[in-house]
Figure: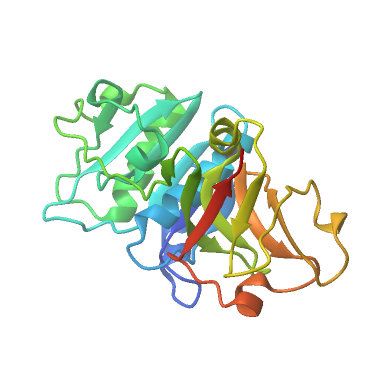
Length: 254
């Protein structure tokens, strides 16, 4: 059984997801699909990269990951395939994969020769090659110009981090573009204050949502390693009017 994950901006009210899955099943009937998300905001490769980067490390070797977001970023569009960490990745050459793998190079990425074929044909052709013999050279040559994009990065000074809200999840937990490793490096064992509003900062990191009383605010690092601001059994985004792309300030003491 071949595991294939799908991350798209297709939505869930049209036939597009079914069309893609059907074309893949024609070449690989023994497929287990995992829908990471089909509700990526239209053309938002930063959100797509966040979702996949948080998910793919949990999958077994040999998994194929398709990102189908902002496919027609140029005319003609290019589509790429590569192998990383014993997993395979397919999608448009629009910079989405450079947001996940900053050290990705042209030497490991192959362009899928499209010959004017449909998007579903391009993806299914790449999957057929991967499943049958894993020889990516059959799909095309190394790409000449890998598109690179820079995601929004935290702004760091000696005593402050200015981070950005990158996602509001289903529970209205607020996810920030700051991972635990960077936070601890800048913190350097100093006390800290996380300002998600003008007053009453958070001054400790919880391990679980239940570490605080129901209705109280907390901060923790989620399963993907990113900082969250949450309310135990509540909705942090609505309660504090926190929205995507807003800034969270973290100050460090002596």
